[in-house]
Amino acid sequence: MSQQFHNQGFIIMIEQDAAEKDYTAYIPALRLGAKGHTLEEVRDNARDLILMEVEAMQKSGKSIPSDDNCIVETLSVSLTV
Image (cartoon, rainbow, N blue to C red; front, side, top):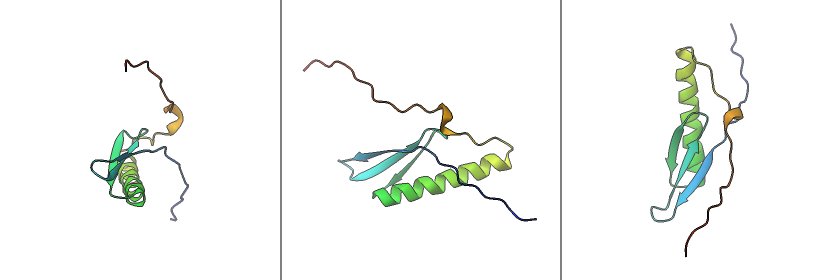
């Protein structure tokens, strides 16, 4: 029996921590986060984390969430300066 594969994209939001000089990636669909010292490393770590989580979900019979419910926007607020 051969395995079938398909590509599924996941939104990730990457933030740089200037003080720590590293990056954090948040994966909203899975509610998970990954860290890395470089952009490449944080992307690789996020990819590995996604694959591990999806594999665990499949083994437990859970459906894989999509980004359809994820809304990414910029929220403006008035600040006193």
